[in-house]
Image (cartoon, rainbow, N blue to C red; front, side, top):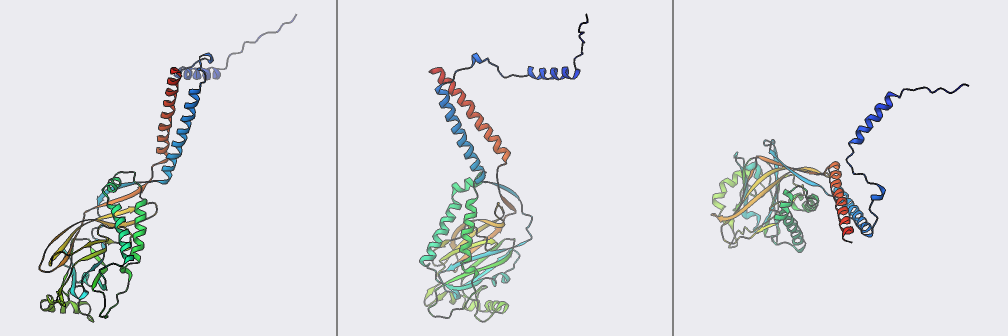
Length: 380
């Protein structure tokens, strides 16, 4: 009788190594295992906690994603201004409560240049009093400037995380006002005896980036205005000879002295149509005494603006003001440039950072809800 013979087959060495390798990983399992009999029963408390937990987690998820897509942050960096040898523009638009022939102006920098700057300024007869429409425009400008210079707003700007939409909004609004202003008009000579009794001094002057002084004072035949029909150097030469004889007389018209109450519609450095709001825009100074000399001290800081919608080189400034005495009424603007520049960059948090924050928030809520459910079950 023939029987079946059993063959002894040696186990596969690869299978043994694989099972041994997996066993080692199983030994590392630190998570608690429970039997089905040990599972806690489902309760109404647990169901309510679960529903509330998932609702909160969903709302937080949607909120965080919305914030990430719709808001940005601002980063400030300071560095030495490497473009100190370059030139930039001074843009001014100031209205005085005196006729133009009673006003003279000059710009002198620390290198001694004066006449070349002064003759780039323009003058035009204008009313010092604002019309109702212009008054509304000025009110809007002041409100915009107030929001930009509010201490709480500055504190927010200095902290990372503030939105830059206010910057883009103010830039667009002010740019529209600039394009409608006197900076883009052609000067016309008005010989009408009923011409406005004020004078608008405006223009865009190319300057070196060194300290200088803008002096606007009572007395005709100065660097800015001069004698109709003459131009350039001839006007300057005649002004030098005639100033001692007629300068004092030019301060008086029909028995009235020059009134140096003034309104600064715009004063900036850099691109004249940048649209940014500046510290002196919209300011009005009323002359209280006969020979008041209003002095503005301006410290200019080169600023690089980099947002997702535009990039621009600007020159922000801080200004202090005081009123002193002089031999004639005047407005003096002393400006200087900071050796340090600031870069303002708009950026958005990385997506990996968003996911990391969401994981921490949602995981914490899930763990806390589990603890709360256990406490409620124990109390019930």
